[in-house]
Length: 151
Image 1 (cartoon, rainbow, N blue to C red):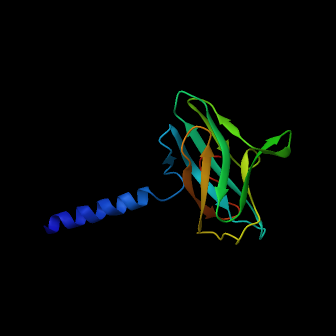
Image 2 (cartoon, helix red, strand yellow):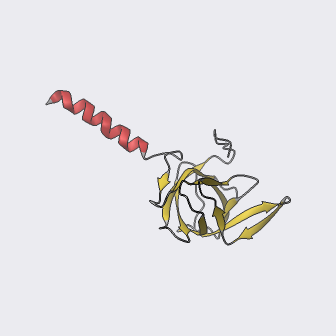
Image 3 (cartoon, rainbow, N blue to C red):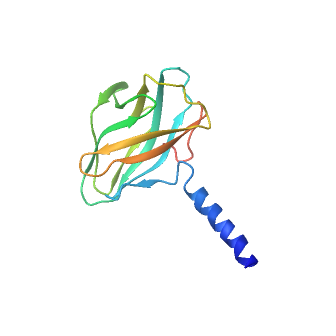
């Protein structure tokens, strides 16, 4: 029985770690998955930004209609001609992706109930027009964090 203890413990550790981090992704079951989610540690007490990638592996367009969080209000923004404008929905093409990144599409958190600190995790729920919502655990990174994937 002892030889199984170490492999079982290693397998358990691997499974736990597989669920951690921003690159593990979440699947809504509708062909939409999320990866690379993070929030730079806010410099303001009441505002923050969030970034992630949504991939649509289905054969039909998906629509992100809203984002909610228990730490404050969340709005979706796009940058057009260097100016930020709020958007109430984003389309994700069939077999395509939607990237929220610094200087482009992004999430804005406003009226924060508390200032998230580096090392903490913020929970957000993505709402889609025709598929179930998906909860994403967004790790809070340093204010100067730049993801390896470039988004």
